[in-house]
Amino acid sequence: MTRIKLCGLTRPCDIEWANALTPDYIGFVFTRRSRRYVSPERAKALREKLDSGISAVGVFVNEAPEVVSALLKDGVIDIAQLHGGEDEDYIQALRALIDRPLIQAFRIDGVHDLQRARASTADHILLDHGAGGTGSAFDWTILKGFDRPCFLAGGLGPENVAQAVKALRPFAVDVSSGIETDGVKDVMKMTAFVNAVRNANQEG
Image (cartoon, rainbow, N blue to C red; front, side, top):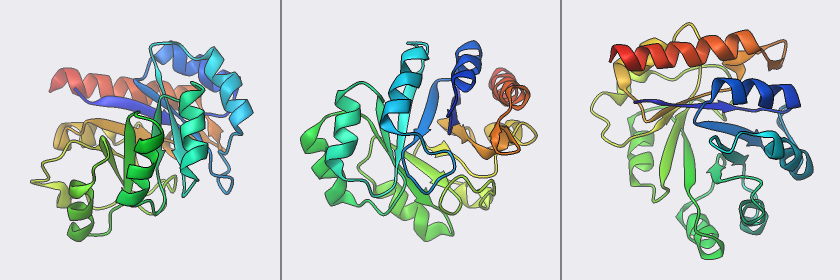
């Protein structure tokens, strides 16, 4: 059963729509260079409106472990997603501060990147194209035979996510730009995406 992550939520209405759709995860982006950036204070206010059955993921790019652990300890997020150049030393340093689930993201340009992803000690891995949030996909055919459950990201939207779920059966699918119109979340696209995943799960 493929799970669903709706990433890059920034507004109270985004949270309201997520509560109605009940994905497994939502994501807050804490990297300032992203147009989806939310401050810790704003994320906390949004988290207070989030249904308790939905896990909040914080997306970080080369952030100090102390900053990440503080947001986890404060309950602003439940899971940290590492989307920069974080290595195994970084993961161990973060685990020394707090024992919470970690997702490590990998940019997939070829099979050699899959080998790196497979070796990660993070609880989960996420396979993406580029730096994330680009709206473009990598060549999914290279995942044939890949034996580690993963979050699949990059280029997903309501129009192709069912195909991805049926072909790859990933642990989860992660979407951000694919559920936006003019740079903000679109409730119709969010609904279509969630329904497409759930219908594909049922058909599977």
